[in-house]
Amino acid sequence: MKKPDILFIGAGRMAEAIFSGLKQSEHIGTVTISNRSDAERLAHLKRTYHVETAKWQDVVADHNVIVLAMPPSSHPAVMKELANFVTNQLVITVAAGIGPTVLEEAMPGIPVAWIMPNTAADVNESMSIYACGQHMQEADRVILQMILDAIGESEELSEEQIHELTAVTGSAPAFVYQFAEALEQTAKLYGLSTEQATKLVVQMMYGSVAMLKDGRKAGDLRDQVTTPGGATAAGLEVLQEGNFSEILHEAVIAVNRKAKEQANN
Ligand SMILES: NC(=O)c1ccc[n+]([C@@H]2O[C@H](COP(=O)([O-])OP(=O)(O)OC[C@H]3O[C@@H](n4cnc5c(N)ncnc54)[C@H](OP(=O)(O)O)[C@@H]3O)[C@@H](O)[C@H]2O)c1
Image (tube, rainbow, N blue to C red; front, side, top):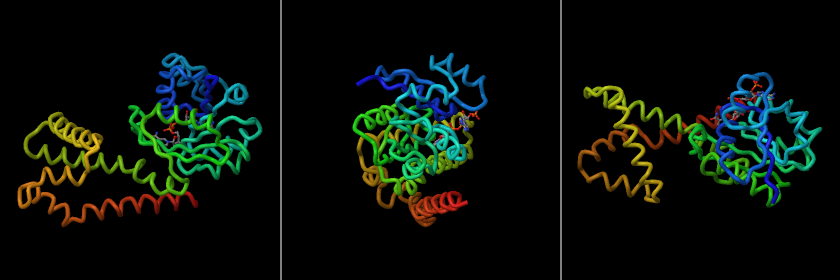
């Protein structure tokens, strides 16, 4: 297979996370980036990653894959213009709320995909969820997977599931950071410096996640730490009395409710 040439429309944080990972692959051809106005940023990215820069309208025909990495609000106008250029290129968006249905409506017959990464794409540890349009071929899927692999792990879901589960992969990192911050503040009550409190909490969380990544079950690991009637059990009881699990469930529902409201406005 010819190495795919990839064009990014939008050259912000998410585009950088993706192409910085992709540039390490030997299976990728030219990477070209573009934006509307920030020439300084383009020049910086060109120097740093040895990518090409261009006005996207001038080079779109020379690329096999187009990644839309600009805000959702920019999509309607760009998709409308892009529809005049694309023939059979693969078009991928990373924008919240812009699923394959929206892309196919704007560009009928074109292979399209929707990726929802999360902020950990910055360190190649995204948990990305994605959905494919109906015109995707096997070769398109291979390229899509390369892009997904450049930023971390991925799971294919239905478009509807992505709308519902972005709360878990995209928003829940904020819940985790809230948890970390609260525990750090608690640790500081016992006389630790900020650096010490951060070190304790971050490594505790990192080690806990490493055990989970090792394939062990959350419930089993929790039970291993918790002697019935012991000190950890007393702490868990407080969390249960505060409806810890239900609160998390409600937080996910609240994210989805708000996302729906925003989509309908
Ligand atoms: N960052 C994340 O963790 C994350 C996670 C999931 C999804 N996403 C999605 O990724 C997309 C990009 O997010 P980001 O964090 O990378 O945003 P960002 O850092 O603000 O970058 C947006 C980029 O899009 C360009 N742009 C805006 N309108 C454009 C247009 N009409 N034509 C061409 N370029 C345009 C901007 O440059 P100019 O203003 O110079 O044009 C900028 O380079 C968004 O849709 C967001 O929902 C981001």
